[in-house]
Image (cartoon, rainbow, N blue to C red; front, side):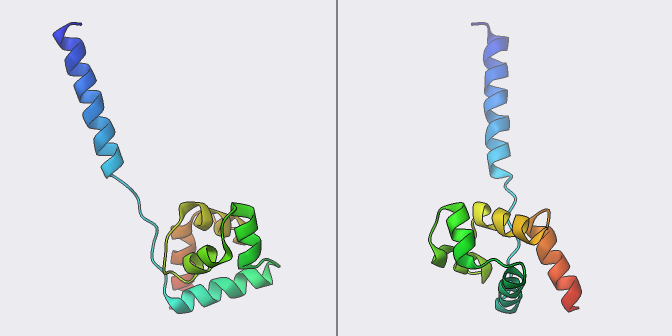
Amino acid sequence: MAESDVAVLIAAGRAAKAQKRKRTYSANITRDEGLYLQYQLRRAGRSCADIARTVGCDRSAVQLVVTGQRHSRRIEKTVCEVLGYTSWNSMVQQLRSRAA
């Protein structure tokens, strides 16, 4: 293996590590926003238990995500799909713009 090949492999490894460090986090929501999300789910004919069955987790895990106490990309993504939003962050932005 030539030195240039080794240098390319090292550079690729560093790029992969940098990409891992560059995570995007979902926006936090307040308790009131969480209660409004639960209201919207009910209006859509869904509950936290329905979301939990879809995702394959416990209802309390969905409850914690919806009330803003925990984060789970799978649960957040499913809630957004049910409510018709593109992403969790866009949903939170729209919630806040309506409240303002």
